[in-house]
Image 1 (cartoon, rainbow, N blue to C red):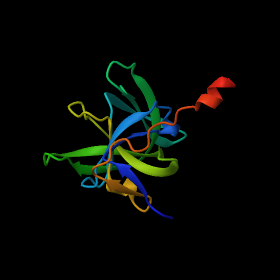
Image 2: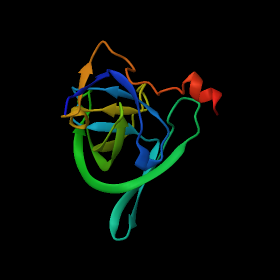
Image 3: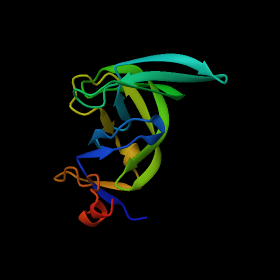
Image 4: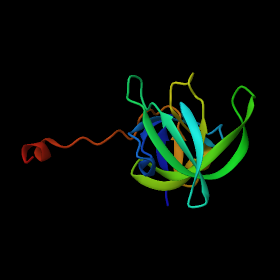
Length: 150
């Protein structure tokens, strides 16, 4: 498979979590991907540990709740050198017409401009980053012809 070029920021979907489109910062310097959550809580479903969480996908947007099975808990070092124990979930990522399963940790990214940071493990073997590119894979708009027949 030929790698698809993506910009340093892109719009992505996490369809299994039922979230709206999210702005993502693509960061090859980060190993793991991180999703900003306002709050999170644990519960057990079918004998398996799960995490529920709430996030605000965009400024001035309504908060959205989601949940996923916990796949791991690991220490993560942020860009400031602070180590925290984070919950990891596995979900599908849709970017540039490609859908693949990735791991994401849940973190407090309240001071960050992007609710999702896509790290290099999510990009591996599918994407290359054009650092000069930005939103290279915008949502396709319906053509004028499609609109006339609607």
